[in-house]
Image (cartoon, rainbow, N blue to C red; front, side):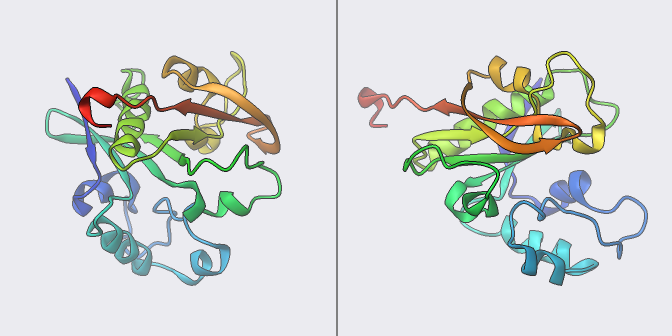
Length: 197
């Protein structure tokens, strides 16, 4: 059974995002689409992991993790769009003034792919954003149809994945990943007045 929880445990986040062989290596740590370019390039080696460690200790976690039993097997980065570089993008339009959240990275560990973990991550990220008052959640996946996408570019997700999770296309972009166009997709969150949401 897959369980999705806020990414509050740094050691578990490191399993998904940290360097695999050399702990001092400069790897993404899912910061490339979270930070402005200057800050992102200024963080090298272990400083990147320390930045993520600090994010994990904040009141709002930097994303969600999927667990299979007690093993961390997947990650989704999600945050308010206004706090991300995409809010100032020239190639990805801002659809309207809603304070949406954005899913900007999805990763499933090798050996665990093909088990529905990515969909659980997307749905868990939506619930996480809902819990923090988001009116909607967006993503900018590739619109690749049934074509294969290079796994290095798969972190943005695929249209079909988000459609399965209830997202709909709301805009085109001029952004491309892995040779395929990216589109803006949105899941509008419906509040339940009986539960006080």
